[in-house]
Length: 224
Image (cartoon, rainbow, N blue to C red; front, side):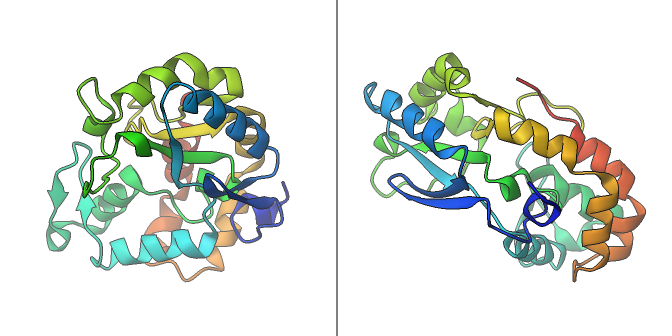
């Protein structure tokens, strides 16, 4: 991937799938479809709640959270009161669940947030919270199956362990053959250059803490 693709400013590496409907890196698609076929034979209808995400989309999410237009959550999922947060606390609260624009793994088209549509009750609002993926959660069957078989198709969970940055996300899977080289290629200087040219809210706070953000929230991930 080139610099624009790495940071979500170009989508020349992305293709659209119709079933299941999602946008992915072209090298990811066949493995994901094969995993979906195998899961379907076990009664699991794998769907992506989020796959490729552009810089503009990630920036919109970030800015809305910084302005208090979207709910912020602590590491345990408890809603936070925006007005009570210092700029540093606000920055950490956003980064706990949302990547910095330009630094999202979803820019690469290698990462997906997975659900099992077969398991969703009528009228249920999917939240993408850990309890849905626990042993008694609605996605327990899918979680068990992915624990056993995702690696066979090249996928792993980058946010499985609490490393003091991003909270564990049992729904988030990454295609190693694409995401590992992408992570190596996304340097701090590339990220800084993109953010300096952006309209990100809290820019000064972000740029001041960017080395910490890079090491704590981007690099500190689980490996396959």
